[in-house]
Length: 310
Image (cartoon, rainbow, N blue to C red; front, side, top):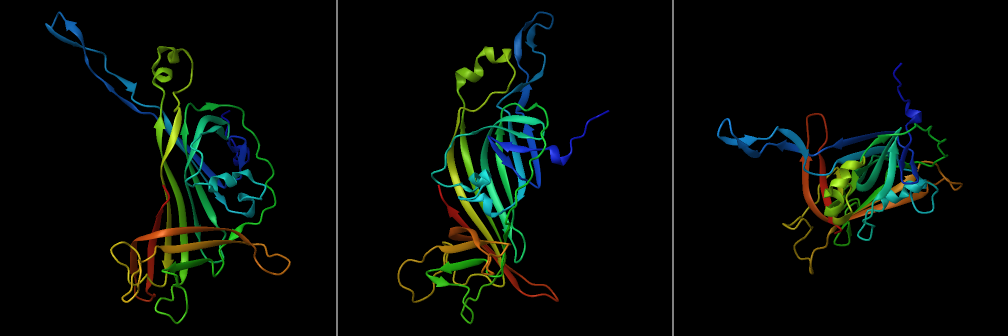
């Protein structure tokens, strides 16, 4: 009888870290190309002989691991859940790989984080998604039951969950020329890498004698970006061609748009307040904004802010 593995036995690990995910997926792709070429002289046709067409590798296998999870206070420094490291996409982050990982009964070799994102809406739990590049061969091992999930304090989006500033001006002040109110926000951190392979190790004929796909030697950090998409009641006034706010009569150079997002705990403390779990910032330029309205509804706006870290 065919075996189907229950979700509760699909443990996700990265290195020695266990992930409490609500869903996960892993995919692999293999770079193969047609091999058709002249291969000597054909005496019968008095012309060139063609090899037997086949498919050959033109690169190393590469995959993608993604998983969804609910943000809570254990994900950040001081907490007990070691997956806090996925919130560490910055200029000084290590360019090394995470050695070994698994999803259910399947093991993979190397992993490198590429993207972290989460969405916020008032009074909703904050759901996040992490994505990793996967390298090497996948092979099956025994499945392993998920450990008992710890008691957590999930992060929740409250009514006043963010700040928007430009040129030192709070754009959310009531009865002002701005009075912007966030309706929702999405935040993402992304990193691109340049992969390096050692020619001797990967091209030597001896690699045909043992199982396992070729692996990159290192992955140098190339680009790091933060992006924040805001849905609100308005858009930002007085944007110039550089994506920053510049009003008539203001002296000095216009400053970048600053968006601060605050993650509060859903469980209140003894004083009746929701503790601040963490905060994320995106200080950059507006890349686009738009207004929409339809019959029976209200005018709403949205804008995107991007920050180049590296």
